[in-house]
Length: 387
Image (cartoon, rainbow, N blue to C red):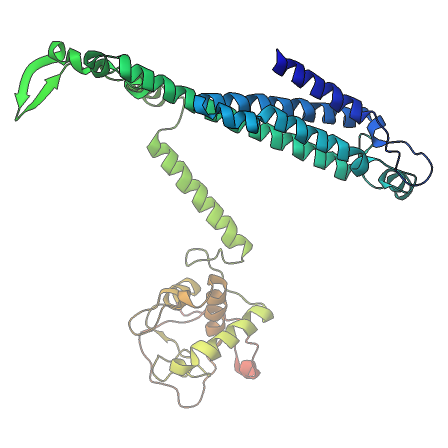
């Protein structure tokens, strides 16, 4: 009864302190922050939480050890909580009271950020204190729970028999539907393998229900994918993904201007394409064929004899994939560049460069040839196919 009276008086004192205006504030009277309902609510909650902390601390000390009662009297947690509450509330007017030049006036004149009419800094300070008090309360409750459990286990261990200890199951054992050791004889199936006995223990519920769920899922899966065919099978999903990938690759190549290959390449006759083809030829092919195409290591590209065909598709294929000692230029050129080089090579036919290499391959005549962009294009002539 005395403790309850003490807490009540402490709370009433705290509430009365909050209503007192700071008489030592400088300047003319100004609206106090304690006129704000939110501030009063925060302070009242802080006081209540401090009282709860004092009560829980008192319970914790009593649960820890009865011998600490003397020490508890010397430093009673409830008294300590009341002192802390009083100090905080006595300091509150000095900390939060606002005069004409205070934070409230500044907030109004300068447009500083406020929360429910309270300066944001004050709001966050009060909220932080409240959360700290809640954390302390939670810590005290956890400690009380552990102390009570330890005391309960101690009393139980002193009173329970050996059989009761053997039959004692943990929450994990109960969760897995295990049986106590004393019932092993009734579970023994009579199978002994080098001292390892087989027991008729029931499988855990979570395992069984998981297994039943898998069976149910398998039935639904079988019906949907292999009976009703309302969804694609794994093979069909793979085939669809391959088709999508190929379509995306073609679209990408098309955007890059590289969709041409040996099956659809066309002879390029534009000046820009032929000029680009000549630059690539001089850079990459002249080492074996000379800039004039007369041939040195590679064959002569200006006569009517060809080793692997003289149409644009055959030439594109040879340049792209290489043949014999000739490298595959697809690793260094795009398909569009290979088409440009192949088209430029066609312009070299009939240019009659000096010191040409001896003919190689099969005689093949040209129908038409594009106009070369180089200076030697004047020597280019239109040929007529021989039947």
